[in-house]
Structure formats: structure tokens, C-alpha cells
Image (cartoon, rainbow, N blue to C red; front, side, top):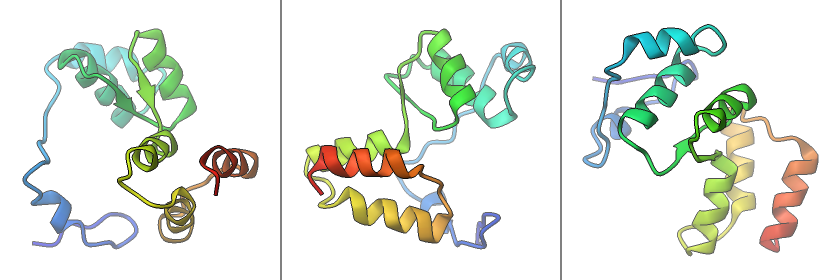
Length: 123
């Protein structure tokens, strides 16, 4: 079975990854409350992070991040995660990954943020 995204990418390797665990939220009412201001994915992510007492919530959307922080969750974005990965030696270049994100996934990175990250990372 091939699991695809809107971009037509084969995600079967991710779907079958042994480290990936799919969890569902228990508190549907909490999700409904967050749905008044956020989309379904962000709402469920926040509720699930609270339910499992996650160390961090990976979220890039500004409104979702603000709501998560309001709910006392620690939030990190994908770019912050990449910076941590480089600090830990898991990747050699944040720039290469950011470029691939821009080109392949159409991931938007504001130019001032892009340059700031490169400067911080010494790239």
C-alpha cells in the first residue's frame, strides 16, 4: 500500500517505521474547544500533547504555537529542531535541509529568518 500526501510523495516508509506510534486524542470536547480558533490538526496536536504530557510540541503555525504556549506547552518548530539536530551532530548542514524543504516540500521560510539561522549555525 502506498500512502501519499497532497504532494504525491510515497510515505509508506514513514507509515511502517517502527519508531512511529499513532495516537488518538481521548478528550474530543477539548479538541472541539480548540477548533473554535485552530484547524483540526493543530487542535488535536495540542490536546494530545497535554494528554501524554509531551516534553515538546512540534508546531510551526503561529496561531497554533501561541495557543499551545497559552496552554503551558513547550513548543519547537521544524527549524528549531534542525538547529538542535546540527548541534547534536545528527545533520551536517541546516542550510542543505532548509533548501530541500523549500524546493521539495514548498516549505516557506521568511528570508530574514533563513539568514538568521544560517548566521547562528555558522553556515
